[in-house]
Length: 209
Length: 206
Ligand SMILES: [Zn+2]
Ligand SMILES: [Zn+2]
Image (cartoon, rainbow over all chains, first blue to last red; front, side):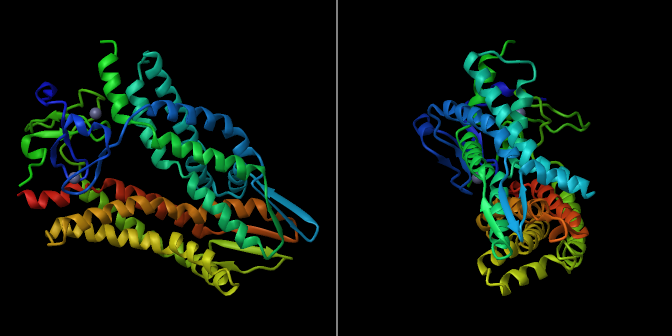
């Protein structure tokens, strides 16, 4: 039995400790913390979807060069080698590490891409006030994709691989690294400024009944 | 005295955060969130059972992940396989202490620490241990924050395998431990996601 009407709008439950909290209207502009367990309850939310929309679009434009351009270049005794994000996944697949290739593809390619794409679509839908049938599903997928998007860990992996190979040959940073760094900034901005609760409230208010 | 939402019969939707009144019915009709349609429950369903299952599976997989070779660097036809730990030691003795520390933290310390913390949290809930609720919640947030960094070694392998592919001069091959280690990382992520931190605070309420 669900009766949503009896719960006032300004009541929230802490996601980490389930404490019921009355939020004051004046507090809406600040970052709010749970008084019992210090969980973040809400962020400041001014003009935020503009920034995450812009970051999502820039990220999508950067995506193709970031995954296809060479990240590092190595030369040893006259031989040259280079790697790109997509090339790394392909080589793992060729070496019969199928599950590993699939996991790396999910965390460094599919999840960041879908995160940016879905955020862009959701922000755009909010702007034009038109909500397709599966809109709630998309908002849920954003959170899921965000939790599996691990580009910042991949960037650290590039640094570790660089330092590791420094003594064995001549190694140099290539164009893909710069694109990936810019893409990483876009992904971070996109998730930092995306306000899920506001999108839910907006959708609840404007969805066609 | 604080009142939890559950004591008022209010459930918070796991997917969209909306609060709804939820009555416990004898027959298990799944109530759906009025906003997003997800199934509603006061706490994550079978939180402890699932967390225990994932944690034990991950602990078992830690053994092959650490004993088997994860990476083999073959230069001029020769090369000996490295386990995670021997790779760290090699980095350390070749004066790359900072990188050795990063790889050690990401590949060994993080998975082990994460599983230990999960076991502590589950024991706190099951045996009602008198540990500080605040500190347990901080530990819970900590394992959520650090869990993803275990992927570092796997990303590095995929970079090295492609980058160092220079015919008979040098090649890098991944070993069977890579798959086992990937399984450890994914299963510990599942374990941390199935644990419900509100169970810790429920100990105070009744
Ligand atoms: Zn709280
Ligand atoms: Zn919901």
